[in-house]
Length: 395
Image (cartoon, rainbow, N blue to C red; front, side):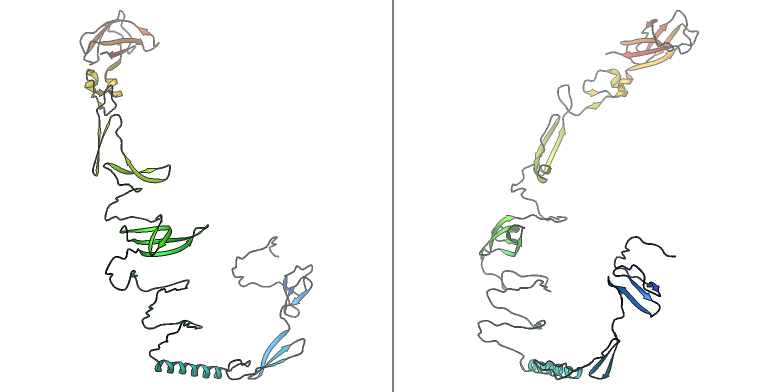
C-alpha cells in the first residue's frame, strides 16, 4: 500500500534522507522519461531515457594501476585500455607531467633565488625611464613606506581600504597663505539621465561645510546645486541662522507647510480676543476679556452670582441657570394653604401650577409672601403630591 501523489513534490533543495528506490524484479510498464527503479534480479539501478531503461552503473567497472605510471581501465563491454603517464622535469613549453619531487625541487630552487635577490638588493632604484610597469600575477606588497612624488596619482581599484582614520587634504605641511581652493571629496555619479559631478567638503569662500550636486570644479573651487541630507538626529552646539536663505525676525517660529512638505519660518498673528507680542527669542500671548462686542476669555458666574443676575462680565453655566428656578410637588390631602420656599431672593418670579396626573395647567391663589417664599391657597385640599409648582426668577 502506498500514498498516491497526483502532482510533483518540491523539496526546496532539502535532503531526501533514508530513502529507498522502488525495487522491482522487472522493469515497470508505461514508464516516463526520468523514471528510476532498482532491479532486484541483477542488483542494478536503471533510469528511463525516454526510449528504454539504461543501466545507471555505466560501462567502466573499475580503474586500477599496474605500475606507478600506468592506469588500467576495466570495461565490461571491452576493450580494456591502459594509460601510461609520461613525466619530465618542469621546463617552459614542456608537455609532460611533472612528479611531486620535480615540482618540489623547482619551487625550492626558485624561492632560494628570490631570497638571494632580496638579500643582495635592499634598495632598488629605477633610472630616468619614461614609463615603468610592474606586472605580477599575484599581490604586490610594500612592507615599508610608499612615497609618490608626482602631479597625478590614479588608483583603478574597485575597493580601497586605508587603516589611517584621518585623511589630511591640502598638503603635507602647513600652508603659508590662502590659495582660495576648497577642500573635500569630489565624486562622480549618474542620475539615470546624465553623468554628474558631486562635492562635499569645506567651502573656502564661505567658511562653511557644503554638499553639492551637479557641481562644477574650476581650479579646485566648486559651485553647483546644494544637495539634500537624509540623517537621523541633529545635535547643534550653535544656532540656526538662516532658513530658506533668510534670517529669522523677532517672534518667528518653524512651522510645517503641507503644500510642499517643508518647514519654513512663520509668525503668529494676533486674532480677535488674543494679543501677540513678538520679541527677540520670545512670544507673549495674552487673551483679552470677553464683552458683548469682543471675543475673549470669559469667567463663570457662581451660583450666587447667577441667582443675583447683576454681573455683566461673567457667563452662566447650566448649573447657574438651574439655580434661577425651582420646582416641587405639593399637597397632603388636608391643607388648603401651602407655603413654598424657593430661596430665589426675589418677588420677581413666575409661578405656574399643573396637575401631576393629567398634566393640565391649574390655577390657584398665589401670593409672593417674601423674597424666598410663596403661599398657594386652594378651595379644596389637593391630594398628596397632586400639584406641581414651577418657580422661575425674572430680572
